Length: 300
Ligand code: FDA
Image 1 (cartoon, rainbow, N blue to C red):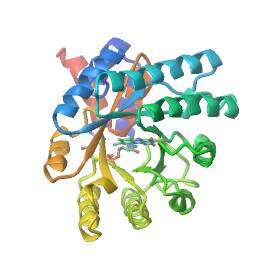
Image 2: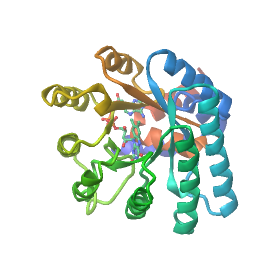
Image 3: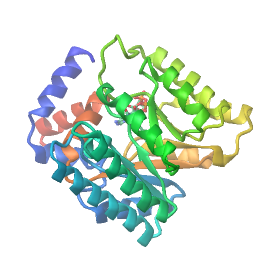
Image 4: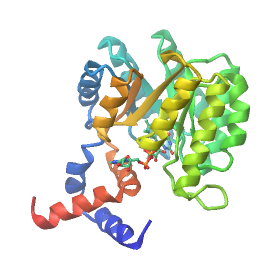
């Protein structure tokens, strides 16, 4: 990140939460489940699917994890009750991955069983590199135990991802492919934008040729255009893949993808722990931090 952006971002982190919140709400459905249900309804009306995420990560007590499990259960019940076209995305550090893997396993298993009762699906987000191996291990274990209604995420910037997908393809894993949102050391992650794009497309091709269902998660025109080309070349059915985008990001592009006849899912985060998520979005796109800052000092 260039030093000016770094400075603006650091300054943004010093702003009152109420100010950050005003801007954050562009990316977050709200603090309550009802807010998220309203947003998902509107998304569904536009012919798009959604995935709902209860914000929160890196919890440090079992009580917090169990509270997060209960909130996710509510989301699954609510999707069913409100006839929403949506599934659930979760982060394993919210369910105790760093405290006790066995505890985390049983928490996720419970959610998968509830989702399965509703014929629904749970996506395990990928967090920073300290969790990659444990996340994939837990995914493989749950699949081995017969729980098929789940998918994982592969980050194209991670050097290990090629090897990871070679193991996941024979399992016909359902994979969301993204660039990777976390700042990682050069030794384990690609840094160059073009190199990441090239790797993304290589991984995408491998997954599609390997007949894995792929969630093509990006707002990058170049990647979306290339993906559309692969889809055409490989003569894929609409049910073989979906595009995925974050709530509040490039909504016109979203509409275009749907107008091209593809399925698209919007990631809808909500909940009380909106601050950490917002700061991560600001880090990805320091232009937003600039807007926040300018607005404060122009009094708008
Ligand atoms: P890029 O960052 O190049 O963005 C392309 C264009 O989109 C930008 O030029 C800008 O116009 C616009 N844009 C992108 N981000 C924006 C923003 N925040 N605000 C406004 N405009 C923006 N990562 C991860 O590590 N683990 C995960 O589990 C997930 N899950 C996930 C789900 C979904 C549905 C998406 C879309 C993304 C993720 N990610 C993720 C995040 C992902 O790794 C990546 O950091 C972002 O998608 C940004 O990369 P793009 O491919 O969009 O390209």
